[in-house]
Length: 315
Image 1 (tube, one colour):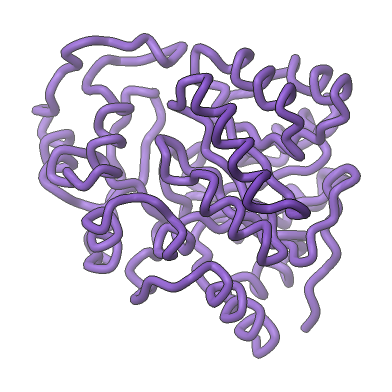
Image 2: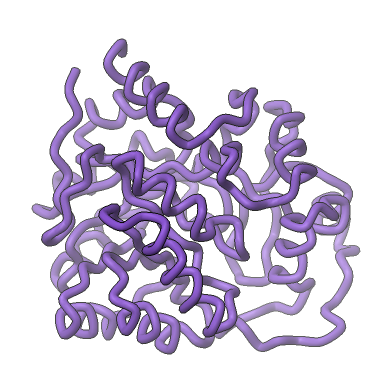
């Protein structure tokens, strides 16, 4: 089996493999650049970064990957969405991925700067809307994904529907951890795939060792759905903080940063994610995909790519 050619606007990666843009400094320049250098598309998770830090992450990724494709992922749900898009475009980012809501304005901005926009959706209806507005590609994200979820349906179900509804490339996201999973999505019609959880357990991902160990220790029954103040359910690994959320006992924000357009203020999701990234996993949310329990080792990004390519070829 051979990889299909993926084109997103004028961009054509060597491999149709995209590293998911995980927010709050999980997907930073070293990881994005390593993926880009391996032949995929590396994504910086922009959400939650101060504006100066976002600029520096983009510049650093470009320094580390001179010829690779570097993108950003920006949640529409954040209050400074427009400002973060503007910064990314000013820094000549290669591509912007956006989800957790729908912006119509971003397509005109992308056209002005010559930057492809990729919409992350969970239904054929939204995919058609994004294509009509000017999206260069669609990420169809199913229930198996980590982080905030926009559907209760499987990626395997939504990809054929989205593929039938649009004429632009369709990228599958949610639940994939190896090359066999990628091959299955390609057989369903996907032009590319987006993996996030697999790349957390890479040497280049800059989260704390304790965060990575929480991934390595996860069992299938430890992967749970939690409530998020964003107003969407989230998939995470069970820990004392997720138990407090389930019991309605999560700590209320001490100081609201007003980072989200809509927030229930049940707890501070930004602080909870940051706590985990820094190693205080008992006091934070550890987002992950449904199949995190299948990953048993931390590897360099280059080796992860070699394994994905080999497994894909054997599938």
